[in-house]
Image (tube, rainbow, N blue to C red; front, top):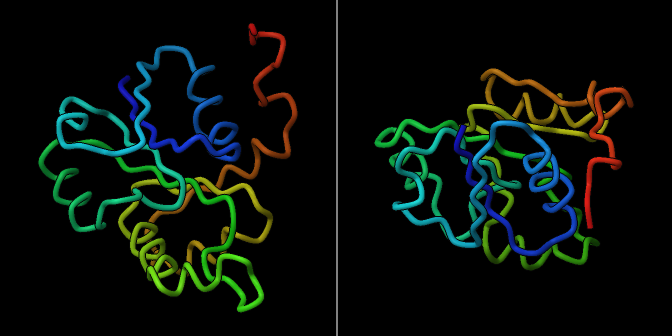
Length: 151
């Protein structure tokens, strides 16, 4: 299975995207900071945190139709920020909250780990199929073992 993950050296993306994909057997993992069409050819899954930075959702949908990959969006936090949040102004200026909501609508799957977030995502997706990964977060037996990592 070929999976491409968008990664920008952030710790949350490392632990939520890269590490689980690295430990998953049978995965040919590609990592990129900037998604290009050439990377999408023959791809099974495009896995991103919140949205594809630098790409409009329409472009991703067009590429998905052309190349046949599935889009999985990982949500690690709520996408509508309070005015007191340190990133509020930047989100507002760049229309980030609306862009994330658009990605949630077109995603084939949404991964969520925060209790209570599932209902918000389901509402934003306008009744599209939703599957939360909260059970895995709660069930320690399904978590990857750190003993398998080598430094």
